[in-house]
Length: 161
Image 1 (cartoon, rainbow, N blue to C red):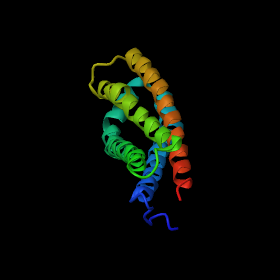
Image 2 (cartoon, rainbow, N blue to C red):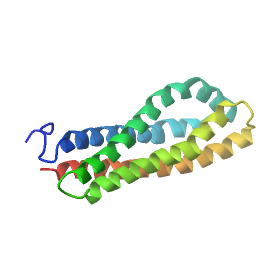
Image 3 (cartoon, rainbow, N blue to C red):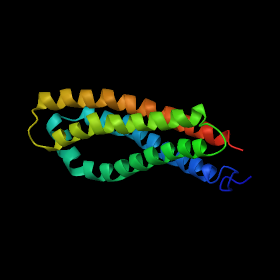
């Protein structure tokens, strides 16, 4: 059966495929930030980091925020579509949805407010270093949740008829 064909439960398979793709892209984007941008940010003086971040954060945000919102929405839709079919949502779909929503929650509660402070112009160099350390710790959690979500979404897709 093609990944885009309907299952007897309706359109659950295409939604699961879209979930796996979007969650995978989200995890990949966060991993890129983890292994490329975060080491760069930590390597430059705080004033230079704030300048770079102020100039470039809007482009990162313009990609990552809609991607996170879409991944969260579609991963939840996958679990819901399973629940509306002939079976209960599987543990993989529920894990993918929960982990993706965890990424969104950490982003909204911690990382986005920190991003606003980085660009607000009121941080000292020490304040910038401290806040970047906090931002990084929470980002590590987002990366871990994103990887869990991507693996679970792929697993859920692979287990569909």
